[in-house]
Image (cartoon, rainbow, N blue to C red):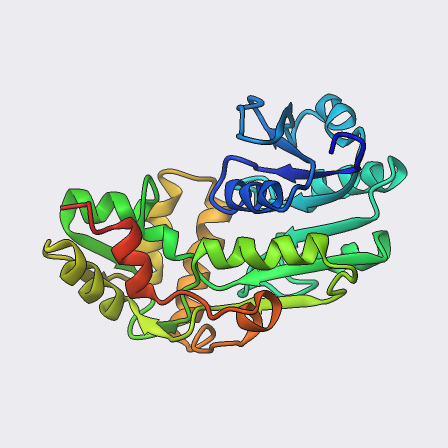
Length: 282
């Protein structure tokens, strides 16, 4: 199908990007898998793409008419690099853009919220995916996963706040539909799992599935901010710690029917995720 226009997937080896790429390939779509090292991805054309190297943008966009956008990791001002790219993408013939945002950040909000606000003015066909917290934050090399393995603990400033944790597989399922359906959503989509859980609940499920003792350790906003600031830029650390504080205040205590409505199937439960991706971690 090389004669077809391609979808450029940015961050194609990342948590959602690799799942979006696999979903598009399984539907027979031509995919350009963008990443800083052009890592081979089954069924896709690997291309080098770096948000901070505009010289890589042109070749990545060549032949693409739609794009899946994963913001630069760790940036508190992604609009500074993303908006020039999006203007170049539009000029290069991209007609549809699907942005990975956050349930915690609305249009016009900080960071990716600025890109969200600009997107409808750049593309007639667009969508912003605003997932709740990823279930995959507890797996692989993610910080919670590391602390579970190393200390048997999850540290947050969320208190007893509840979250509609969402599986990256479900996010990717919605992204594939937003990229390929005849009509783009033309709106933002809040994505959650089927239930809300506190981090105490999540720790208990992980402990049961893995057979390891796992606890949720409550910390203050300041303690979490300073812990993050040892690893990432202070502005981004403050933003992340502020999201935990918002959870404590009830901002993420919600579920939506978006996954079922867009994909035609129910979202995965946290237990199903844990049994699939964490059961072997003992």
